[in-house]
Length: 332
Image 1: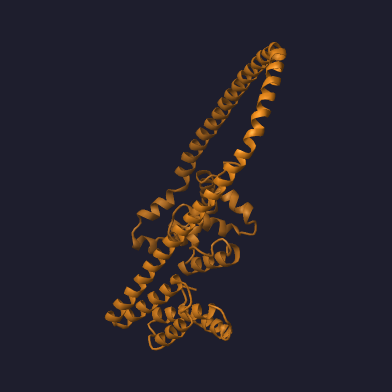
Image 2: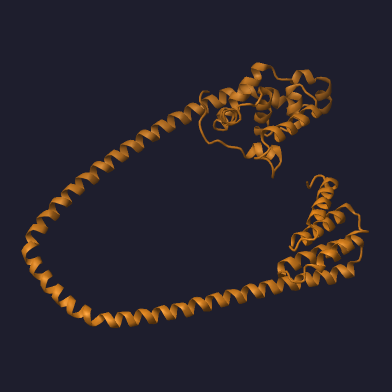
């Protein structure tokens, strides 16, 4: 709830009450969050109390956790205007960072030492094992060598003949496979080129017929926007052309959106398509013949009811701009 600090403060307070009496770090973290929210809201009277309460349970935690508390206190002291105290606290915060770095480096050195010692032990065991097997391998290798020479003398001619046959077969298969692959690649390249040329041709036709009012709207003065708003409102036919243009230029965006979210109304799809074109909200409202507040309300409803899971961590327009289906539309 970063956009609504007051509401976030209420929930943090409820969570703090629930966590009291529990032996965990959650209460300290909640108290720290409450202090940070109060600092951002400018309510500095209670911040020091919550920071002190949080730090009392923070002494046994890691360098990283203690560093976070020091940073929060430095922000509070700076907000209060006590820059000297903020400077000292931030110095402590930097010391914690240095301690974290030293601790990580020490752990890394210890890990390398452990791996080195383990490697030495493994090498020593392998050496003993190899030495114990060397004698047996020596006599066994002599016997195997004699048998191999005998078998080699008997099967040399047969092996050479089979090798020549296999080489010829493999060569024929390789040539046939290469020819087939090249033919298929050339066919796919021709098909892709034909589709691309047809797509470009349709894009030029559609954009020439569709974007006239959008270009006129961008060039219009504020006075013309108010006095001649009806002139910029797009008809149903123009909307259909605009949707087809977006579907072609953005690789099946409209088809993919309708398929993934079948409950979307036509107006909702039109709003998403205009956002995909990069239009601002005031331009979209004028083109659709609705007020800015109506459009804003509709976008909020869309985000909450239709796209709540996907857009939880980003703005609605930003999410629509990043939405791609990467396929060609069913029809142009």
